[in-house]
Length: 221
Image (cartoon, rainbow, N blue to C red; front, side, top):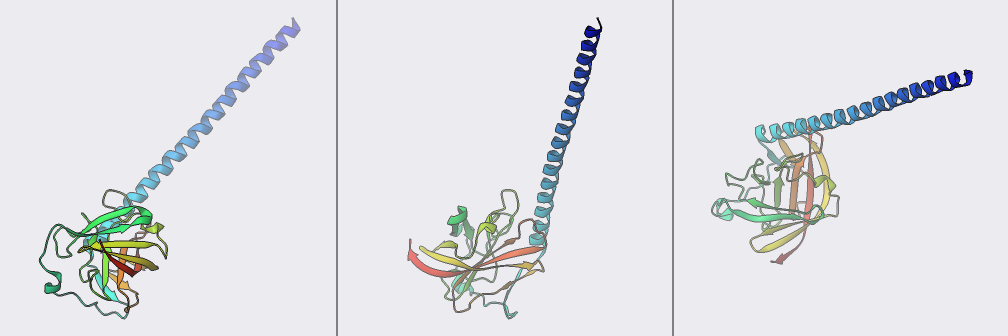
C-alpha cells in the first residue's frame, strides 16, 4: 500500500516537472520568436528611413560637380551634345554585379534619379577625350535602387559604357566617401578619360560613395 502511494506521488511529481519544463521551453520559444520579429521590424524601419533620407537628398539638393581644385568642370556645348532625345542613348554594364542599365541624354526630362540611372549635368560623354562621364543612382531598397550593389565593387573591377556604337571599358582605381553637402568633389587624373559613379552609402544617410574608373580600351560593337 505504502509503495503504491509513493509511486503515485512520484508519478505526480514527474508530471509536475514535465509541465514546468514544457512551460519553460514554451517561454524560451516565445522570447526567441519575439526577438526575431522585433529585429526584422527594426531592420525594415532602418531601410525605410535610409531610403527616405536618400530620396530627400537627391530630390532637394542641387548636385554641383567640382573638380579637386574647386573649379567646375568644363561642359560640352549644345553642338557637341546634339539634339535632345528621351530614348536611351547608351548603356552602363558592370559584370561583377550583373548590372545593365540604359541612360538618357542628360538634358532629357526622364534623366532623373526617380526613374533612371542619371547622367549628372556638367559631365562629359565617353567620347570626349580626358572627359569625365558621371552617373548617379539610388541605393537602398525598391525598384529604383539601381546602384544598391555598388558596395560590392573594389579597385580593379571593371565597368563598361556602350555609346554610339562603341564599348568603353573602365577600371575602378579609387573609391571614397563624402558627406552629403550638395556637391560632389571629383578626385581623378585629368590626363585620363574617366567614369564616375555616385550613390548613397549603404545604411548611412549622411554620406555618399564615389567610384572613380579610368578608361582602358575602346572597341567597336
